[in-house]
Amino acid sequence: MTQPHILITSGPTREYLDPVRYLSNGSSGKMGQALAVAALEKDLRVTVVSGPVSVEYPKEAAVHHVVTTKEMLAKCLEIFPDCSMVIGAAAPCDYRVKTVSPHKIKKHRGKPLQLELVETPDILARLGRRKQHQCLVAFALETENDEFYAAEKLRRKNCDYILLNHPSAIHSDETCLHMIDGTNHITATLQGSKSAVAVKILDILLVGA
Amino acid sequence: MTQPHILITSGPTREYLDPVRYLSNGSSGKMGQALAVAALEKDLRVTVVSGPVSVEYPKEAAVHHVVTTKEMLAKCLEIFPDCSMVIGAAAPCDYRVKTVSPHKIKKHRGKPLQLELVETPDILARLGRRKQHQCLVAFALETENDEFYAAEKLRRKNCDYILLNHPSAIHSDETCLHMIDGTNHITATLQGSKSAVAVKILDILLVGA
Image (cartoon, rainbow over all chains, first blue to last red; front, side, top):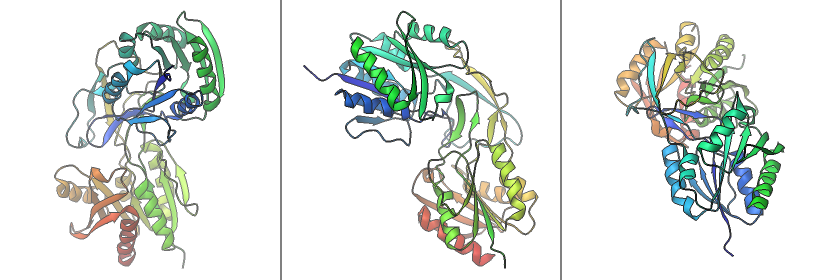
């Protein structure tokens, strides 16, 4: 039997406005790191596609470093056909500026600066469209109406599970999340260190697989 | 004689759009860290005001952690009267969104998102206005017309020196910079590891002091 291959996306992405400034978020890569460690312990082959982070991934994982959401998508599309499972633990920027300035934008002496942001591709939704045998798991981080949005995300991304958490988990060593299955039911509520929660997530996914 | 007190600003700041997304830049805090180490070796009392970074500052330095440019300014204004020297090695965001969303901004199904950015306070210029005996040193990072902008910055910020460098120094362990004095002359061109360059900067400043 071939060793099952899991793709884990991790960390934030960055979308540059000019050579210096960028849009991003506080994703630390800690959850992706914890999932990579847990997956290796369960004898999976692990590939991580990660944005810029300061955490270190286990040496046994194949790690690909990317900066933008577009780069993360391209790398995931390349790896996806070979995988049996994907966990989207990254927090890719979902907006980028329409026009990146080749030079550092100068200040306008007190005048406001208008930025036009356009959506970046939705990585999990794009993988969801190509899904064959793969089990697809997305994180959702909401600050309001969270279960409504989680259900909508599950459908739109063609995912098997949504892991619903809260901004308080960002950059923390702890997390608390609901694991919601394809029929919108809460399969489990997991709380504790990201390492412990990562093990529980994989327990559930591998039993279900 | 009282021990001279140096204030070093370091790292980026973050300006949040909503509870998750923010504007920032790739400043790592490595130059601020190198300056803190060099200043301690020269027996200065060192205070660091730093944005979110993963570098660690020397234990002998008093370190204040801040997130936004406004917070960095407030802390610097508090410390400034007690200092004899300030080096602005931070890369504070110079724009923030006019209105921060209390909830995570939802995607608009393909529609662009208009952001209105307004200038944040210029920390070094604000300190420059209150300058009495202090020696004020600003970093300038330009991608074009760099010496023109450096001269303009020197005047506007009421600084004694400008350290002019290039985006390639961001997050690198190496740097190359021109040290420009109050008469717009290049006092020195320093190149090498950030640690070595930090020592040379302080050599020049302390001879001049």
